[in-house]
Image (cartoon, rainbow, N blue to C red; front, side):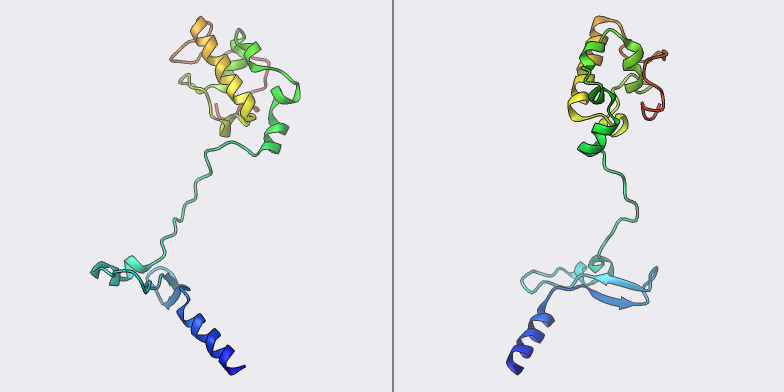
Length: 153
């Protein structure tokens, strides 16, 4: 039994758990990475700044769209079983999914499903090629979709 506890103590002593230093410059405790036994140590790595675990204080939201279930609930095209490509000749509908500069808004803004977003992009590009919608700007028109759904405008 004593041998097992000695073995566990030796394994715990060798584990790469972070070391806590009390009374740091901005926090009460700082998390510091230990040195790896197999790595080569450079002189810079002896400084506290290089050993600290760097965590970004600001977290940006992901640039991807909503999860599948949430997109199915928010996507009018999916709910009504409509194909956005059929609305290529209706700029009032497509304007709600474009930025003021004339770019197609991403899925994170439109909250569409992946399939509807692909088809919407195809419809907007077709509409621009046909000359129905302006290429480099956006002229706001009243459409069939309420402006609260369209995201950031």
